Image (cartoon, rainbow, N blue to C red):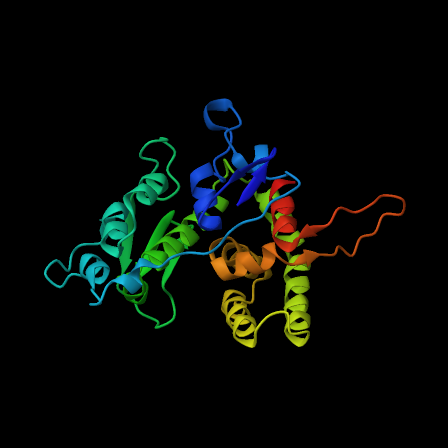
Length: 275
């Protein structure tokens, strides 16, 4: 639930919130069409990140996404319509329409997805800046089989990378500033997770699951790559977004005589993106 100007708006999770409001679309047709620029600096932002995974309703596991992307009968196939992949995973049509901009004319994701036959047993999907393409591996396709939540998360995650590197959204200097400022938030979040686990505020299983995601996201030796992956996980992992949205952020900067408004870690991330 997000409260704006006294009115509540309900979203399933942060990804749904971003999709419905075109968070990364800016200056469309010369005007400010960005939900980020217009609304995300509101005082009260709370987000319900609970997601109902309809895959639990299906008794038999299917391999529709794998069959679509890596079909032995058509080994020369390299790209597939994103719409077909989402449908094969069981994503509802209204979500697909938002992602592809069917009604708004402003798509969030690419029309096509490229299958990558290489398998390192770790990578699900990735965005290549060199050819501006989103790739899905066999491991990623398997993760999407019969799982609309995974399909939405993986495809949205890689497309957020793509949008983050779109110069119409952020120039090089803006990206560098964002990634630099995220370092403090990252280290603060890690320490707060440790403190909350020690104090019994969060379970050990939740702590371990979030730390595991962050550890995998920051495996690169490049700090900018680490912080970009940290950002994308915060924006697309429901459990992480929920924790960040319900955990207070205390800045190291104190200004005498000026009361500092309380905010969550999630709101701090939004501030950095908005600045």
